[in-house]
View 1 (cartoon, rainbow, N blue to C red):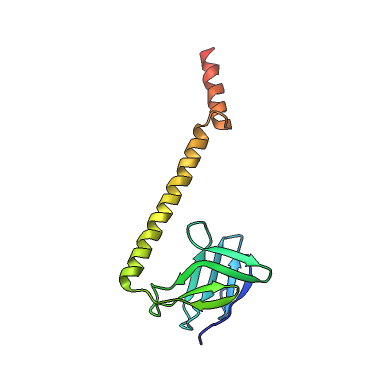
View 2 (cartoon, rainbow, N blue to C red; view 1 turned 135 degrees about the vertical axis):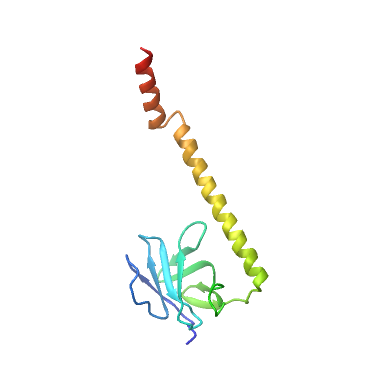
Length: 143
């Protein structure tokens, strides 16, 4: 059966049985999961991160962005979850899907590269404890 409304359920661990019409959210593990809203029964996992999906909470409603594109499933369903409502979106061609998947992969790699650069810069910064400790150790051998 096609789902038109979804109810958020906040959990620490994702349950073994996923009920239709419910979005299980584990903020601890930054993951949300639900059954595909087209009714095909497939479980849809949405990692929550700056480069995957973002969950917006407003009182007792939730929104998930970007859209859910189940392009690896036979249903190929595509929808948004906005204020607990399922809003159906246009179907994409295989070429559009490939372009989005390519862009998503590039966005993730750029995000990872950016985070790694921040970590390296932080470690090399003269003000951090690692740099100060290394300078102290080096000074012991100069004496």
